[in-house]
Image (cartoon, rainbow, N blue to C red; front, side, top):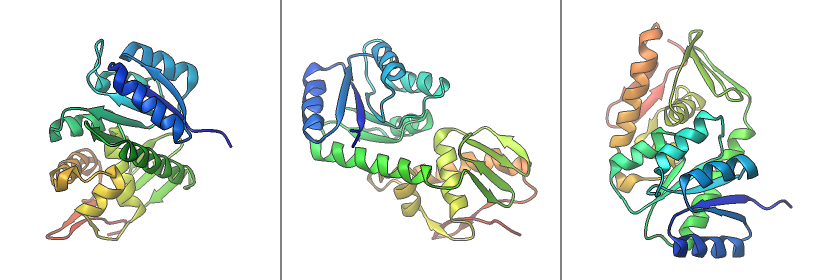
Length: 229
């Protein structure tokens, strides 16, 4: 069986070495980088299955590294590692294309659990149909494209995940807790505001080109994507 390739990017040698040793012991194939420039080069050369990326790097921050990778078409999942715990930073990380966010100090067991959760989600997505046709919304998962009533819509990675989850559960009310669990797999200390923010972002992009509101609020419960009128 081929080992899962993990790239660890952290400028602190002790953290980098500790993670590398522990994850090798857990059965992963490990590569490391000490800064953003080295990380971009390593991703291009080795094509890791997942990237553990420190936010505060000496040459460019982890968000900038992620933007570079995503703009180059690299879709390897990214788990941010950071000492900062502000919700705004978490939202930024997920908006630029990150998949999860782990605050230092963290336990090694938690790192392994997060990696496994992200990989399960990724493999599950790969097993789904290439095109999801949900009435007004059509999602091409291979091309990572979304169209609303035939018009392509430019979505951030997190907006895409949110819309996809709503569409996959068309005509079913989803609670904010369910959305957090399935879209981010991270509860943000129970802060449901991030769901409200991203639903608002989505509506601003899809409502102007849709003949009717597609994402409806069920007050006191959650949200529902209505496939049909």
